[in-house]
Length: 336
Image (cartoon, rainbow, N blue to C red):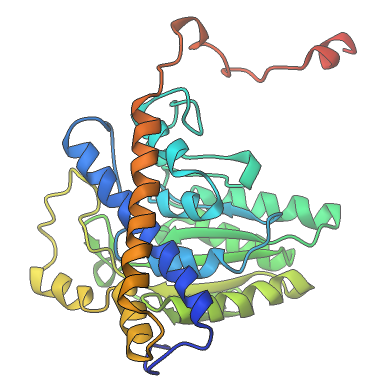
């Protein structure tokens, strides 16, 4: 696995961009926790704090036409894919201005314009969707990549094995991104899997696979770029095991009795934001005033998003039965 051992970064401006992206996710989710605690957001809430380097590094390598499929811990993926912070928060508020008109909430963010296909609440539920999207692209001759994010707990599900098998058989353009944070809800990986090397499991399906330090955004981006380029050039599916860690509990309802506080503290020493910030500072690439400005800009973005969500409206009662069935256009109906 790679780590930020060098006292600097090869491209300071790009590193600053990655730092901003990770900080945007961190600040948005810290605000989500605050709003949830104030009962302004209801339902379930799963935050990504600690894992920001994975989404920031992988999504940086994708093109606009590519597709992204994520799990229920997907706020960061949606934000970095291009869904506005305001639309994300409005969705959590249950307001019609949300990306799903307030009908999906935290676990079901979706945005067709950015080709962000969930937000999938079922463990491993996104993997078959990713295979379907990739199959459509291959049959249509499109040079697209579908990036599918899932936790290591999904590896215990049948959909994981079925999806990898079909993707390998049909040589589909899928990048499987396993966000291995060591715990499937409250169950440690070593208690649920006899083989804990996720990359080795994927290799069993003849899928090129390797493990990456998921706390190092530069290492993640480098590995993702290599994999995405291979997939896009016709190399078939690839698999990345991104070894990361969530600093918060599984969800806001989780009492977190399954892991020691000392373990969490050790991982927090490898905070991906702090790792990159420290490396840039050590090389004189991040003046204090630039860091201050960056934080202010991100805080302003989140503040504006909160105002947008707060000003949102509930969907009219008479519209609640809409979208149960697809709505045909007037032209389509006249031609039927």
